[in-house]
Image 1 (cartoon, rainbow, N blue to C red):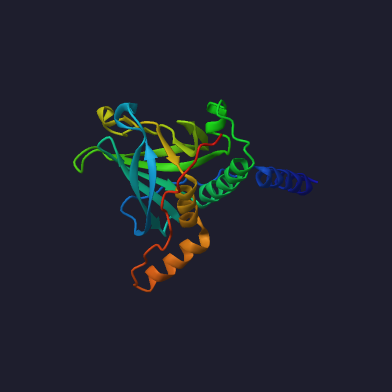
Image 2: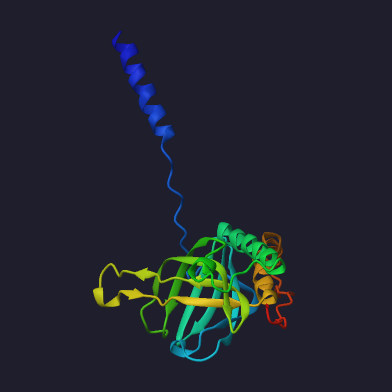
Length: 231
């Protein structure tokens, strides 16, 4: 009887353990991990301290095979940012652009949508590493990236908003950092260039070339399309 009682308890505990939801693995990237460039794209960022028109900015696109992460590396207001996308985030971006193109063609974009429009297509979980100078604090932390659309000067843009990330130094409080919120504005051609480099088959081909000690070079057309007035 005692044996049966113990067996029932063991089975009960086992069923509770298997029923628990496992936490998803945290997405972290080592800046010094093996990586190689797969292309370069262009976006529009806000001018210095948010004054003036949008400013074109080049963005290097790198792949980190050990972490299966794509990095968008850019410089803004004297700070270098490494914005990392995992596979699920890249898939979200591609699907978001598909939905945006559908809404664009159907004229379903609302110029008065405000914050609702700016995160209309979802939020990706990313990782951010940022630094002002080579001798400055290397800050890093998880970051949320909203994806949607926005109107600027009567033109719609595919919109990606890098929210703030928090870095808490485990030893020195003065090294704590909070990154700036940085919105990206893409024309449809520019966003298509990002989506092309986020495509897993393209990444796999670059990875294959790199493993064979070749020099991969992106053959993606990321020229800016000439947008016309939306209305």
